[in-house]
Each structure stands twice: as structure tokens, then as C-alpha cells.
Length: 113
Image (cartoon, rainbow, N blue to C red; front, side):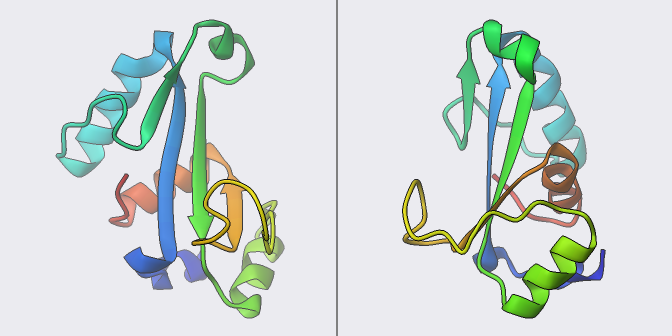
């Protein structure tokens, strides 16, 4: 997706919630891609194993992008929340997308937790 390649680090904030049963694989995958070791609490939170039954991992992408970029994301089939005027980080980022594959795509493109 072309719009992803053009995003600058200041436009993107990544976070993740991870089930406690998946922490090891999440850390290993992140480190394999980035070469950077991470620990719980550094922009990823650990949830009880009940969370695992629901998702296991929730990759969150907060964005500040133009209307044209939002349209490109929507056209690519992504569910874009926003523009957001309230809630967590709404004072810093206008849009949010909850999609694990997008989270990992951005990590592969050089964005970091």
C-alpha cells in the first residue's frame, strides 16, 4: 500500500495489547523484524489469558494523515476510526486503525513501538 511507505515516524504511533500466553512470541517476532529487544510496558501491555481467547494480540495504529491518505486507507479495505475528538491519544492523533497486519507492515517499514 503506497500510502504506508510515505508515512513519517511523527505521523504514526504504534501500540499493542498482548495476551499473557502470547508475550514470548510477540517479543520474538518484534525483535526478529527490528533487532530491538522490548519489554512489557514499553508501548505494549500484557492482558490476562482470557484475552487470548478473544484475540491474542491487538495491534493499534494511531495516525495523523490527510483526507486523501484516509481515502487511500479506506480504499485498501482498512477500517479507519476518526477523525477522533476524544479518547486515548485523540489530542495527538486524529485517526486509529486496529489491525494486526497493518501494525506488522508498519514495523517492517521501520516504525517502532
